[in-house]
Amino acid sequence: GAGVSQSPSNKVTEKGKDVELRCDPISGHTALYWYRQSLGQGLEFLIYFQGNSAPDKSGLPSDRFSAERTGGSVSTLTIQRTQQEDSAVYLCASSLAGGPDTQYFGPGTRLTVL
Amino acid sequence: RKEVEQDPGPFNVPEGATVAFNCTYSNSASQSFFWYRQDCRKEPKLLMSVYSSGNEDGRFTAQLNRASQYISLLIRDSKLSDSATYLCVVTSGTYKYIFGTGTRLKVLA
Image (cartoon, rainbow over all chains, first blue to last red; front, side, top):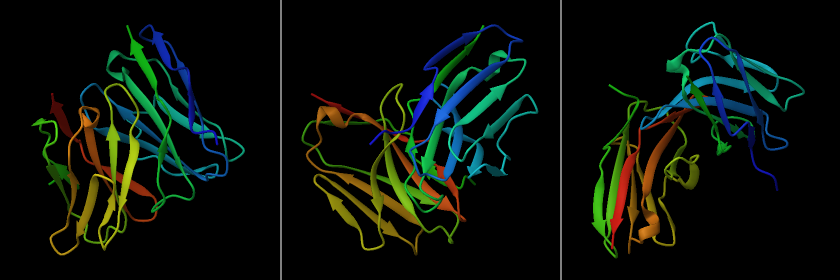
């Protein structure tokens, strides 16, 4: 079956612009996660969705970051007024119902802020 | 102390060698454990779950030691294609996955 998909795969933007990143989880997976990975670094947790609710937003770095999920499926991560330090790969993952189920990752969106 | 700790490596081993990685975790209430593999500029992919009784998948063996709070991954007969970063993952509570920063493996011809 289809895996997790993300779009765009690459995004280059200018400092100060807003960007929207999209994630399509595996069908039927209620849990959805966003992570950020900077070059050569580990995964940084951003936000967790269970259905359309986000019980844990503790990893969002600042109020410029927001995310929503609709219909218990697609999620968008929005970064407003992008900064150069936002440059990273943004990874989305889904799992059937959260821990302890296996997480499956999308291919990521590579964001470059000039 | 980090919740999940791994030796970053790199581990440089010749083809055919056996190599082992350990990962320690701090939360004794952790319930589920995984090893993921991440190739350069790619997303992490599940390698194997780690069960209390230990488990094996071909050349890969994973073990869990709850008393000492570590998990291990053993790779036998290393192949060039095994070169990657191996991520240890531990669940925390009902939904959180804590990722180690990974151990880099380079298998040399």
